[in-house]
Structures are given as C-alpha cells and as structure tokens.
Image 1 (cartoon, helix red, strand yellow):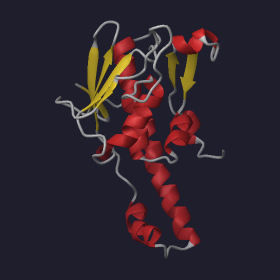
Image 2: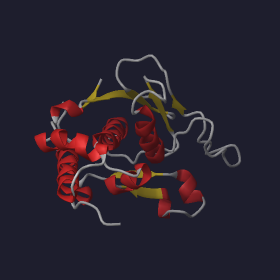
Image 3: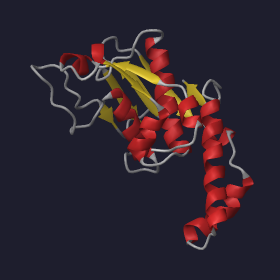
Length: 199
C-alpha cells in the first residue's frame, strides 16, 4: 500500500492485549497501532478518522500514563447514536484499538477476555466519548475540535466538481492533495490541547 509519507510521522499507539499474549498472536501481547492501520480499517484518511485516532490516543495517555493500556479492558461510551453523523466511523476506530465491542465481539475464553458489552451509544455525558478503565473505574471524556485546522480553499472550490464527476485529473489530484494536507496538519498538532480536549 502506497500512502502519504506523513502517515508514518504520526504518533503510534501501543497496547498490551492479554488475549493476544495467551494465544501467541503477539509477543507479550504487545501490539502497536499506526495511523496507517486505522486508514486501512476505515478505507480512507480524513479529519474524522484522524480525530478518532487522536481522541483514543489522548484518552489512553490520560488513563494509563506511562503504563501500557490494556486492550479489552476499556469501556468506550459515545454521547451520540451510532448512526448519527460520523459516530459509527469513529466508533470503528476506537473499537479496533481498544477491543471494545457491543454484542458482536469475542465471547471470551474460560470466563475471561470477553470483549462484548464494552461499547455503548446514546450515553448522556458532557463531551463526545468517555473511555473507562475496567480495572480501576478511572475515566476520561474527550472532545475533538477539527475546526481549528481549516481546509485549504482549493478543497472547498473543487469539491463540487469532484463529487459531481466532472473534475479533471488535475482537479482530482489537487483536491486529494489539499484534503490530505489538512489531515497532515491535524496529526501534526496532536499535542495541542485545543484539538482534543479532555474534560
């Protein structure tokens, strides 16, 4: 897969998955997730996918500090309905990284490692997503503000042509370049506390 070079510059997320360790899928259960990984999951790179990645990254940092986050031991709750706007896209990314699922995940092994009933929607809260450690009950709620990183004018002007099917090859190339330029700038500002706000 060939992709923009800035994907590799984005911060990574390292998890420890006890189930992966038990079954020999990863040495000590340590799994590293990259932005390119979630792009493969979503099938595209956009501000929403970048935001889902960064919200999960920030929440895990706040919950675990320097310790490795435990995949499968994190509850993820959304304020909005799964079908509302881009909530489903964000939830897919959060689920992929944390292992949390609704009722369709791994059922467990010997009464352990059950990944079901850890992902919820329509939960009243301030903020967009709440992440909770199952072991300690500690939680953090985050909000994402992509509006602070504006798109280039080229993207807005070319969008009607591209979606309308009458853009030239140059138009499509310029649109794609401009689109990914915004994603790059979002990922580069991962440490800006205004971009992902922990409540």
